[in-house]
Image (cartoon, rainbow, N blue to C red):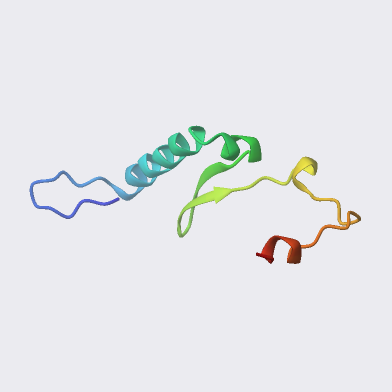
Length: 74
């Protein structure tokens, strides 16, 4: 989200990254399922990261007889 035009003001890398994080966080706050999952936006060395925290409620039960093959059948 950097600007490259001559007339546009340049934003420093840290300020730009903070603004980008805020933009992504605002987007995630508008998505109910993202809120349910607890997705968080973080700044990383390579850019903006979306973090999914480990919660017991998000871990499936491997003992249930569920199969992805059932989802793939027409």
